[in-house]
Length: 281
Ligand code: C5P
Image 1: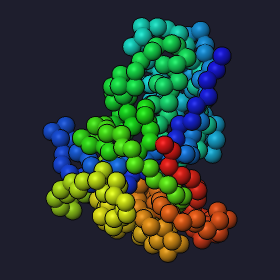
Image 2: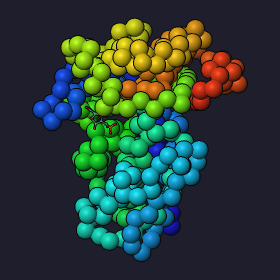
Image 3: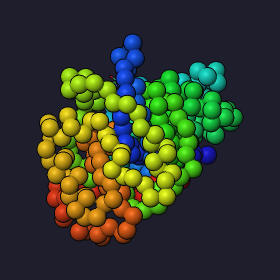
């Protein structure tokens, strides 16, 4: 019996870099919102081994060997459970890699959740988050999904009960931004920011959207001015908030009122991929 699960994308609503650890990783302060759009993972039981097949528009850019986090996730769970049961993973890759939408991390978390069910491991979400943290800082977020405050290197999570009701439009340019590059540019550009209380802002009856900032925007927009133009375009179209997600290159807009139809959004943003979605609760 196989299992098919969504592996959704995320956006960052506000992203502050507040310091750096001795191991070089940066301390973050962010709100993660998991979306109702992304990759899909099917897990097909096998006698032994872990294999991965990637389909979809980004399949050629995705490694299928054990450098892929989805494969690593299956191997780590085999070790945790002390089993050599096998799995064939079919990944329908819709989230472009390196786009600031957390695709690889979501795939890995989804493999952990799916195998936990398929292999009857019975691990709680708390335990799955601990296993996920060994795969990468952004992986634990996707165990519970929804809206979560992220601190430390992004892996100290607090689920929030606020709900973002409205449309989210993603404009995904064909620009791959290296996260280590973006962090190194930030380090050159000055000090780190002091965290604002993002959870308090989002819980207010009228959300003060202007108080959310993404610290990567100045350095990333300086290198890629077309991303600033996308942000301005989203605001022009009526978004109450528009921002880079992660270190980019995706720029998203949050619309409290119905945005223009997808066809008009697509013609407005020309060659960039445009996705219309919403928050997943
Ligand atoms: O999580 P991801 O694989 O995208 O991170 C890529 C790189 O970004 C890390 O190897 C590290 O250099 C940097 N990074 C960081 N602090 C974080 C997350 C990532 O410095 N909290």
